[in-house]
Length: 584
Image (cartoon, rainbow, N blue to C red; front, side):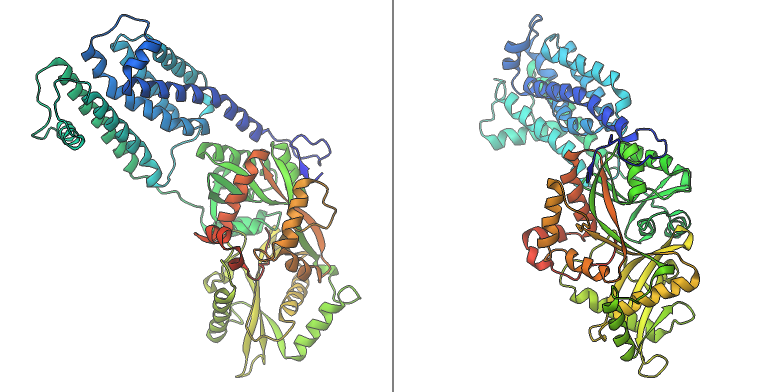
């Protein structure tokens, strides 16, 4: 099967690992009841603030209170109800802050109703909310995190709108208040709230209760506003140098060195001994493969990654897994979906001889006749002239690619990062005044230096034919001289070397065949297949099928720069571009 359930008994035997994802899903189910009760309590509290008579007829079981006493708590009841409604969604996601706010707001509703001597349905639901929240406290682990100020401002904005609605509806029910037009009422209410001249000044118990309710409600709005705009401690990513070292030393898959790419986020795990390369988009944290960790620590690192995602309120996903990593993810409770194929070359056995690689051999021979030489570009071969030409090739490629540049699994060319990658440059007329750089490739080492994955492939606009093939062939030949065992040409998303047997795979197959205007996977597969590689499947691991659309959209946002997803969806023909060379 291509789509693999977490309990598939045919999967390879993984290391022992706790079902971290299963525990996370269990906690999510436990949160549904308290979140629903809190939302219902919020609805009835809002109704009690805006239309107390209607609610009185429906739910009152105690002796009727005086009008002044009922009015005193209406603003608070309304605002507490709005607050419960606003935070119920975050409550369902597991926010510990939302749990605290819901507990306080539910207790506040209960207190207001008791002080007003209203022992009805609202009181019962508020009590039930407090009890349900108390019993399920351990299921709420998400901590308040850095986010968009605009989203946090929804809380004070909602409370302010609720207070204004209460103020206007209550105003017209008090006979002693005589402003006739909407704007005059609004002005009098505003002056009353801030204590300015021209506000309500009527010595009557009901009016005084109304005034106090306005001012108490305004205090609540101000407190919510201060919470929304408070400064938050910036999140710190692991140092790039540390990421490069961990990936080279402990990386076991071609996705490992991608965690050190400058634009990617990094999550430190296991007290700094492990690291996950992530992109967080739309409430989803996509990890490049499994977290990179020393032998024996992979399971613990994965468990901690899942726990960190739950604490932050993210849906975890694992991208570009190989078979061994997929088995470990399956043991943790993930399901998996085959999303492409990755091309590997056995360095010691690679040769351009034979019929299978005849096309590559002839192409490389032609490039050499045109004077193309491949050099390993490091401190010994580096010159300012070559630097300028490499930068010009990269800039021209970016300018002429015809669409947004991919990120996340694709690096950025940076001459200041030569120590983080291995660069091979193709030059013509080497060592003469007419020398010209015509293309280059970059490789990222992993598995203790025994393997490397192809990252960037870029060529000049007027380079001779066969330059890219020559770069790859000579790179692999240099790997052989240095004792490297494996070279990954990177993955091809959507590709399949076996029959597509289910509906999801058939859909991916359709995208592979017809999605060339967005991502030229088919052409990329043909290019890599010329080198007669060993094709191995790549997988996406996800919590449950319902998360797949959200994860797919998050992946799009991670791969493309800001605004590119909207451009892609509205003008897909504008996205045509040369295919990148790296893994999904």
